[in-house]
Length: 631
Image (cartoon, rainbow, N blue to C red; front, side, top):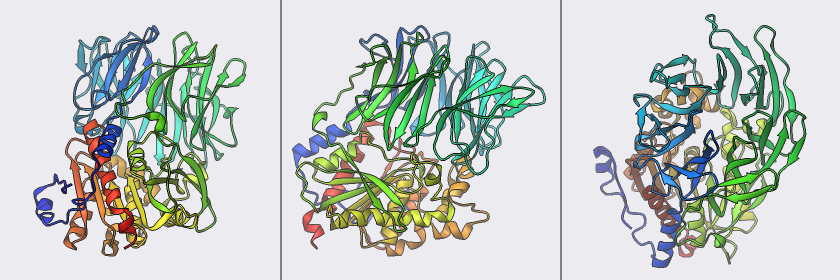
């Protein structure tokens, strides 16, 4: 395999003599075909019932890119509504039966919003697509709300598109980031971000000329919350962790004069965090999604009487994007898992039976033969308990080759989701260990805040603790450990190969940051603004950010690297990748660089996902081979 390069001219010249990494990769046509098929596995979801409950609109990538589809709610043949090459997201029904969605050119954030008839024939734009834009939802009547930084690059104002006069305007100017959780008549439930991991819910009186608003979640320290109006706007149901460690389900009453009542907890668990909830159309029921150590559990709450019912376990580990049918009898949801690509399922609340609605193709892949992980725990350098998902290939001889995979965020969470790259590595005889180091979500507010600012030095020590666990447990072989990660996970890779240059035999940095100075200077302004609470303030904590940046330690790198990035990435600008490639190439170190010209922050097109999966797998097969490890 030859080095793949799509770069600007100066970088291309620097790389002209770069050592090819994988020219001698052994090829197995059957295995290559299987890995390619793995990358081509399609998925479906999220979806939403039409206002009359007869149809379901949903997103599927079966055509090669996420597009909008329509199918009968009772099951049947789906119809593709959008047929472009750029990814579609944010598909939502209007109360009148129209559809809104976003198209993201090149996978970037300058999304073009469209309003379409249900048959996809009558389509009109709702914005100019010239600014970072995030799709939203319909409030009551003829209003569609969305977010955009068109007015201020460092803020995401709440805009409203009026279907009646086909005009979009700023409804709520924001100082920084925020969103509109709900909109009913002249009241908006506004989510205002303080910093990453900390926000407040407010009820804004939109018709009040003085801009009156009521705070629902006063708190000390940090807290997260999101919510929905109840049967009327005097009641708000919300998920929150105000003055507590884990997210719970609660309600609050709102009076424009008296203010907000204390938060009343309706459901809580000591062993889980509330991940999401959805209200029935009549606001009499709530379906709760609990995150229990990474797996999903469901609970139904009768809002009128307070009765709670645990629902049957879903067919796979993860549930997302639930939606009640208009009659309240069934719930649509996306279900996925380690061996189950995302599909739409329907839960009948009376019979408590799940019915699969979509059947995305997985040609050439026997899903029943894929590997499920087991949860393993280990200790950090300071005694903190950490955990990770361990995937072992069938017949794996321990100790053997293992790739450590780190999630993004850093507030993300590694969960047992379908990962084509994991399964491709497993099919090649390489184990995968995916840890949740300190700073991950899903384990409470305290755990998630442990990596803030100088706490990141301890989080970075967790990388070695994860590797040491594999070696000491006899799972991983010395000299045959690899490391990979995307976004913040890419940063973890670069920390690992600079702080521990002899520990990893190979590293794959996918769209990760390496230099906090250039990250803050060149990422989109709103991203930089919300990241100071997580990483540090470039104005007042410059030395901290410098000490945390692997760019200043690249002279230590010995590990062969694979670097991949999207040309349209504004979260982590491509300069982060280019700095690494330039420096290591000058020193003659093995490095392969792929720049996807039609992607942003991550890969959404099937052809790019396949290429990435093949490249990552070949890279680690070559670098973690037994002969390499014994040298």
